[in-house]
Image 1 (cartoon, helix red, strand yellow):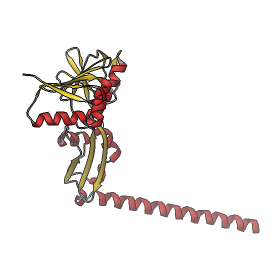
Image 2 (cartoon, helix red, strand yellow):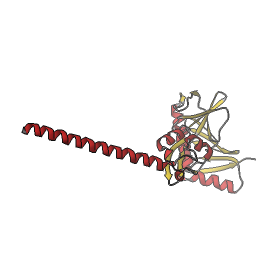
Image 3 (spheres, rainbow, N blue to C red):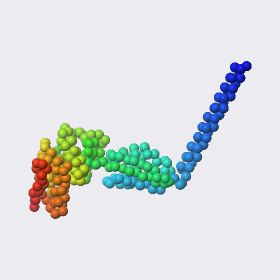
Image 4 (cartoon, rainbow, N blue to C red):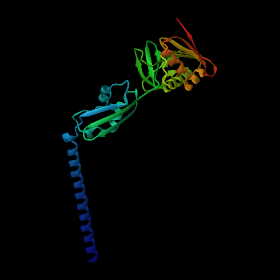
Length: 252
């Protein structure tokens, strides 16, 4: 009899436990339903999408890529998928998204810097500062054109193909340094250790590659260029000599 009572009591306890689990699960489902209903009331509908950090890419394009829509619940905007969609534009390096309750979405982007372009037949290949292809265009873009490097292949999202890897590394490194130091070349040409670059129009720079790099890093070249701009002297050649020393030869 004792064994039977124990068995019966054990069965009763299991049934009570099962009922408690079912009750908890039912409460959980009810709370989820209430939360979902609350999340989709008009109070939480998106009325504003704010894009920050973009310079060259328009707000409209970023919002279109994100697929975030006004009039939809703010909780429908999934940060993971929003970031993934926006980074489909290879000019975008970083993306973050946050909800500002009750009705505002903020998207922060960082665009890629240190861009370069290369002639590729009748087209132009744009890469980031690591040599990854961002775009193949029929028209030149407003980024530094690297001359004297033959391109063998270009596929979006992959590294550019060239036999002159050493020159490519030098070109991309120099472009990164110019951007970091607030300078810009419209065109550059590197032949061994010889460098030539055009700032804009008829103002150019030449010298040994290593010495030009030193003058960029020290800020000397920037000072010379800015001084010439202020004086309206936009035709001539800036020659960089040893120790980063620069002198200017005007042209008519």
